[in-house]
Structure formats: structure tokens, C-alpha cells
Image (cartoon, rainbow, N blue to C red; front, side, top):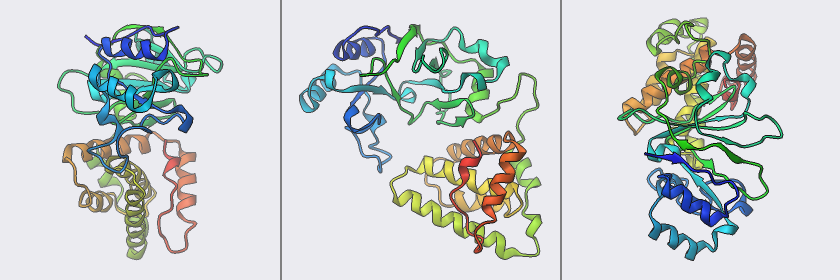
Length: 319
């Protein structure tokens, strides 16, 4: 059984021992270089050697880090929840978390991150159901999910108010809460589900510019160029695809290009599992369908600014 230990008042070295004894693998990082979980280990441009592949509960490995990087009192500790089958909700804006679902957070182990801003701001810890496929790290109006490939800075942390409010075993996340956080449905219980990717494609065919095929071609060419740039800059393939589908399907929703063309184009550029691609597509559709009309209008206005009809980096409008 994996638990969130009570590390309040512990030195960094004793906190490290408490985490590994509780079954939570860790990595050290250098806070002098910023609050970046993987700034000592791994290669950010290599999916097979990224920092989160190095999290460990092995005492021999952790002792080797002490010899290599120095005393833990000078370092910070981090983990990657997906590495041990966990999912953590990093709630930055508790007042934006759907009211009908807040009770599902109240019994989860909880690390408070910024009590000066909000007493319920922080990390809520759960386990994924056994044999559940990996969950990524989607963003929501209230915060982010941290699971496969995601990182968390652990308590304690130098000059930081974070501390463990509720310790104990990590419960299995309920199916209803998982459906909310994993695909971005932010409505109340009983609200209509997000349309499927197939339904989205049937509705968004680029018909607004059917008589100007160069518009859709220009959009796709622009998206491909940005995708190449993201990968060349070191973004991993998963995150790059999340970014591009948010952009491409966002432009499809506004009528600039066919949604099917976007999906076909980027599926051909994808080198990982088809299930992972489908999960990203479903989550993207959920985010777009759940966005406000104002956000959609702002997105469209930005999309129209480029005279060459090439896509620009404005996918952040859909959050």
C-alpha cells in the first residue's frame, strides 16, 4: 500500500527516507536552478530518458545521488505520480473546482502548497484503478492533473510554506472523479457528456471556407511547421501532440479547416500508441467543447491575424 507520509518538520534527508518507506519514489533536484523537477537527472529531449524515468525507492540509487549531488539538505525532492500508478490533482484555484465534485477531494491525502493564498490550494493524492491505461497531465480552469510524465515538488521545500495536511494511504480515485479530471469535463454531475471525436469531426468539416481550400491547406501547413518547431526545441512527443491538437482542432471548431484533416495529418506524424493519440484527441475535444464562447471568439480573432493563414501559437486560449 502506498501512502503519503507526514514529512512536516523533517529534514530533507529524513523526508526522503519517509517517502521511499511509504512507497513513493523520488528524485532530487537543485532549487538554485529553479523549481524544475528534472534539472539533475535525465534528458528532456529523450522520451526514454526523461527525468521521471529515474524516480526511485532504491536506497542504493538514492545513496549514489547523495554522493553525486551532495547532501539532500541542499536539494529539493520531487516525484512523478504516474510512475507508481498514482494521479494527483494540483488544484491552484479551489474556487474554480466544480462545486458538485468538491466533496470527493475532502478525504484524499492532501499537501497544502500556498496557504497564504487559499487553504485548499494544493495536491490531492489518489491511485489509479488497477490496470487503468496511463493518464496524462491535462490542464483545467482549476489547475492540472499530475500523472504519467507529470512532476510534483514534495514537502518540505526550502523557503516554501507547503506542508502535509492529511497523510495516509492513497485511495483509488472514483470513476466519476476520474472522468472529470482525465478528459476535462468540468460540468456538474448529470450534465451531458462531451461529444465523441467522431461527432466532433462530423460537425466541423471546414465548411465555412469550402470555396477556399487554400485556407485549410494554409492552416495545416502552419500547424505542421509549429509541430516541427516544438519537437526541434526539445518538447517531448506527447506534449507536442497535446499542444498541436488543441490548436488544430480549435481551428476546426472555428471552421478554418476540417477536424478530420487535422487528425489524419497529425496521426501520420505520431510514433507512439494509437490509444494514446485517441486519448489526447478525446481530451482536446472535451476542452474545446467546454470552453466559453468568449474564449472561442478570442481564438478565432487570433487565427485571423496572420495574412498567410498560417497558424500562430495561441492554443492557450483553450484551457
